[in-house]
Length: 250
Image (cartoon, rainbow, N blue to C red; front, top):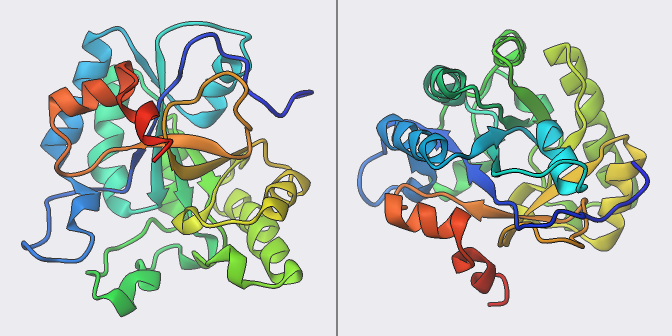
């Protein structure tokens, strides 16, 4: 790839999900990040009905670079939860969609322990065998560092290791190429984008809100958050209109 910026002719939404499961009790921390399986199924059905193709980051690249055009939406999952495999994969396959799941390489088969201090319920993450099932199901694995760290708080050497080694470890675990990165907590410094490139990855996704417009940095791509409370109407506004783009300036 010769350019580091997008060249798509129409805005492209990259949807962000975390867990696809029944919600924890009311008042539980980060309850909003748990989308029910039935809601996720309706979201994907609506995309298909409206003529969109749900795509992994690798499948989305030709559209971001302007080589292809069409109604597409990126689909991403952060952290690598096992419920992505059990609840999201069948829906994705039913519609012929692909997605990228950003996994934490040193936490495979464990839980979201980086959330424990905040009282977040511990939920099982995919192990290596389950990551391979995800890949065999037509999906993609992306890197989310080795330990789900705050990159700005690390030394240059530490951040390089968290980024580069996560790719190496996930490729060994999944048996598939890992070409895309997601910054944990959406936190990073300008130099971290260079480390993503040095590690051999071609995109970096953030928590900046908005659809991807032409001229966006491929290593600092905005995304569209999808929450438990996101209604069907709001989801349509998010991916089909400037609703989310306007929030990028806030």
